[in-house]
Image 1 (cartoon, rainbow, N blue to C red):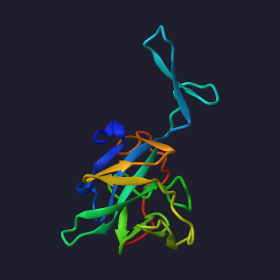
Image 2: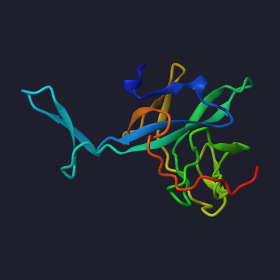
Image 3: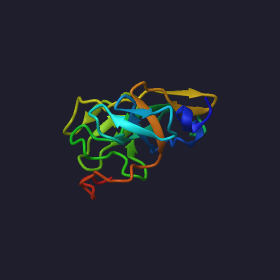
Image 4: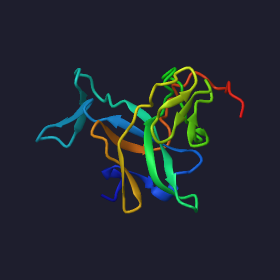
Length: 170
């Protein structure tokens, strides 16, 4: 491991301790690359026969343990959506709001434990965020989930979040 092509998301030191780091993933089994021996052209074919169907999703990293210098020592990883309405993003591109080691949905006021993803307060209380598996190797965070592949850092180009203002006061 050691390159972004190997699923390297970021150095552990780049994961904020008071917010989140946003990145993009795609489902691994959704598409399959096909080419011919006679052609350099490779095209992505979907299981339903369509072409170029890789659907990118957003995920976020959050520090779940920190040392006394506010440097992350462990992280958790979640798909970037609230369990109340799944079109609502927790991290809208500039880091998710956090309070007392909990992620906050700024639209509904739901609180999610950063380490377990459990909703402890709000309209989806008792629900759990969708987890992605990561690993830390030599100070770098890698996506280690069999169902997803790392695409890149930052938000997905098209914004599916239908809301633009917060309903929660901090």
